Image (cartoon, rainbow, N blue to C red; front, side, top):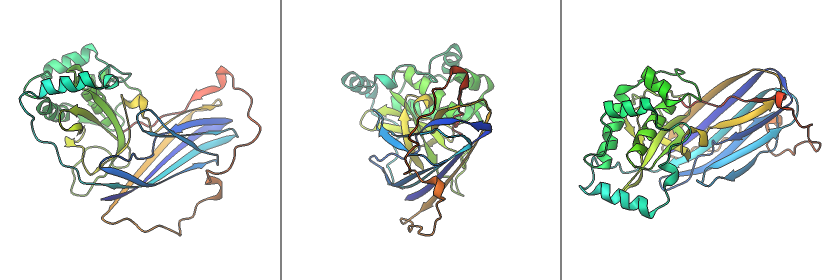
Length: 327
């Protein structure tokens, strides 16, 4: 299956700001079941965009807009090919816990086992683990299937019920949240059992016949846990799904703090309003190249930045730009 993805992000400032510095993680990954065939990032006001890969293989783009502006628009367009993946079985062999422990002992998985910024154990999490009977029993894969189902039943999906920086205790107390919260709670619970677990940022295609709870016009998040013989297995507790052909991965990390679609700061005394729109279009064959698509001249990413750097900002002039919460 081929997916054409258009991800638009707009920051509108209350008054003109003098500089914006931004980092994005919107470039889909290429791995065993997924290939990013094309990717294009457009930015307005025009600037030059630089890119690199972090230590987990995520594509990161960053740019600096030193001139005065009252809005910042980012459009990421991708074409991704996703191969059908075999869904994991319902359970593993009786000695799977021993095999998992041996894998961890021989490998370097400490990043995905230790507490992280948004996936740390708390008193509320431990109460939840007891209530849901989250512990080492049966085999690890069976436990994760069960947890995926229990979290789906325990939490209500309510868009914008939490903030981008909400701790897991907030979602647990309210018994509601968005995909970002579902993923963080599951990661924290899974790591407590000694299973490496990581956060996945990306997109989910919502078909007419699908009954997903997550928003179709936003980015999505789910988790991957390490399993013997299977490697990293994806679970989507928001929709009670196994991550499969409809899940398109852009970045992986310990939690959301490692992989926000946008992260940046601006210089100026102004509030900001964030608008995000995502469109994922499937096709059986690669779509034809659109030769007629107009590209505004000031959206070019190939124009050199101004030669003269702006004056150094003071601490009072720096303000954090909003990040996109994953719905």
